[in-house]
Amino acid sequence: MKVLIIDDSKVMRQIVMRTLRQSGFDSHQFVEAGDGMEAQSIINAVSPDLILSDWNMPEMNGIELLTTLRSQGNAIRFGFVTSETTPAMRQEAKDAGALFMIAKPFTVESFKEALSSILG
Amino acid sequence: MFLDIPTKELSNQLANTVTMVFGSMIGVQVGPSELIEGKPRSIPGDVMAIITVSAPDSTAIVTLQCDAPLAKAIYTGMFGEAPAAGSEDDVYDAVAEMANVIVGNFKSTLNKTNQGLVRMSVSTLIIAGRQIPTPLPAQARWFAVKFVIENCHLYGSMFITMN
Image 1 (cartoon, rainbow over the protein chains, first blue to last red):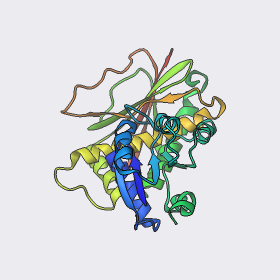
Image 2: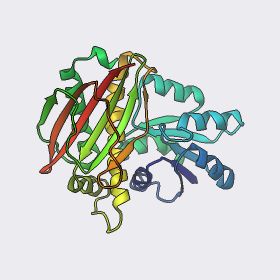
Image 3: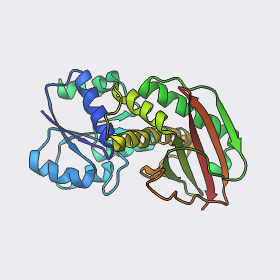
């Protein structure tokens, strides 16, 4: 599977990829984007199977990207990895079509719990 | 929102969040913290991450400042190896992300009773010698919390103004 990791922090993208590998998902292909705007062109180019996105980013944030994708009829599997996780944000994410929300700081266990059913 | 919360409660919550994030993200124990109150003033540090949290009635500018050795320790804790020569920007990015996680969790804790109304900016970095420091509000309720982490200092501060 192709997994697109979107975060405006290069360091955090690297940590997410490392945690994916530590969680046993190292056989998948990882692609990166720095914000929602950049992600759109990458999605069109590589058609990822899963998106792991930060919420708070410049240019286009995570929820704006998810809403845009769904409005275009794109049903790609989408989850958030974010430091802000209020109940209201979880509900907003769910309503927009997100499958899960992983809170930063995260652990290998939180990745396994959220992703095992998707990435095997 | 911030106006209604006593400084002691805000500073305790910030200290708890810093302790939790440093422990969870990089496995580092944070020493006792010290509350500093009074007029807004500059505090020392080679790297400063600034994040604005906007509520309907008030705005808080949260800063996290540390010296270069602690910035490198944060990077090392995140990756399990010291930064390579020439990777200063990655070190500063690590500080910005640490600040993002701290302020995001801090905001989520405070926002439990005021859900959905509080917004958080992306992190802006001020690096000594690279940029002119951003002027921070002189007329604000202000406090800072000083932490000792691995024999280095970290300062978290909040400037709170009414909208």
